[in-house]
Image (cartoon, rainbow, N blue to C red; front, side, top):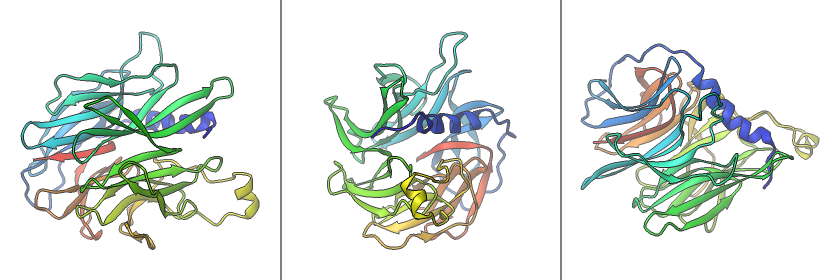
Length: 338
């Protein structure tokens, strides 16, 4: 697939818009029930990004990785193992040389759960190439990610592919073309991701086997203005996703000529869910949140927690009891560990 430069700029400008916003330091609102686990999120405070650990019960925050000035942490995922703790995978662009601009061309890094020992995992080999949306496989042996590679720099065309890196061997497999936002089911058998239609940039939610085989569309690209951030329910039977307001009907000539409302993760959105067997998506919230990104809490609490540019929230799996428990601006990632 060939994208115009606008697709890459869409991803970068979303990041730039967020990072330039001054916000009030986060304060605890009120947790709805006690817990002993910790959340991990990217907090943005007065233009400074920090990967933080938050104790849910008290709201106490501890910095894990304070991103240097002019650096950019686009997203992360955490794999936690009871035996040896956790490991982050980061989509991160370190500060450029003095006097240069950081355009957000991220590489992939591995970092220990306590913030120590960051190691480069996958770096670009040419200008304007970058990697984003990293997510761990259920067994911690592989990392799925999206890969943007320039095709013709003078024509500003790019390819975007969904790929999988097998850590023990270093082998990289192509999973899907024109796709982003990978997410593996807890049982390790299914992969959800968002396919981007060439030309219109319409988003469709796709379900496939873990290696990308037998892909099928669960949510049509014409149903919403934007679809992103899919996450499976703990039983692997439902997929929750963030979506902007349903798109207005488009005339046939608008579709032919690729006329569409801009689709971006910074549009006011809500949470929906759909069965892995298909059907009509069910709307769960009416919050018009920006930058929604969620995870189920698996430590005995039937809760779905999510980050946004307005704060950290939690709700039950059916969308009830939506509660903001921490004020602040949080961007594009969320994880938890005991």
